[in-house]
Length: 232
Image 1: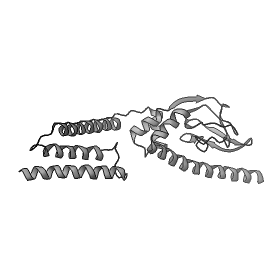
Image 2: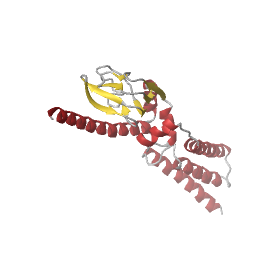
Image 3: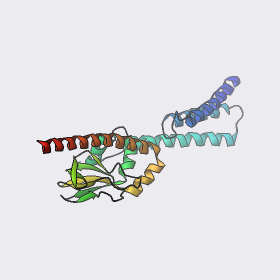
């Protein structure tokens, strides 16, 4: 029996080491389920191994690991399953960042406000440095380059993704062509969030890349159609 208890303790110690190695290699995440789950198992095994030779300090440490890990799992569960979104926020997540986990999407959307624009309002001005980033929920905007219309953006499209966060002047002017409602992100709050959370930053950059590519293709098609119309 004593030998079995010792083996349980050795297994727990090995599990501690393996779990920490997986964390450092990026295979598991501290905020995930696997890491705290393995900590609970490892701490329980080490605690059992103290049955033969009880150590108060060691027991306190293992119980603290178990308690903190349980609290972490509970927090993660609540953040994933009790997150609530408004209808406009659901529209944004479903059409632009569907791969982002709900609790991460909630953090991202906490940096945005719902803003309405009237026809003719300028959302972005060409040549002006601005960290404007917005998602069109309803309405339509016109994109102008040197005063010429090069494209239009409607619902479920993003504005300002090419220059957000890099301090470069806007490449085009964007005006509301009709009553338009957008989710507009606060540049300072969003920048702080992206610095703290690489997962959200990577997901947003990937979404920007996909959208920018689609927008450029749409602008090229618009330019070609305009030229063909002018020639005809």
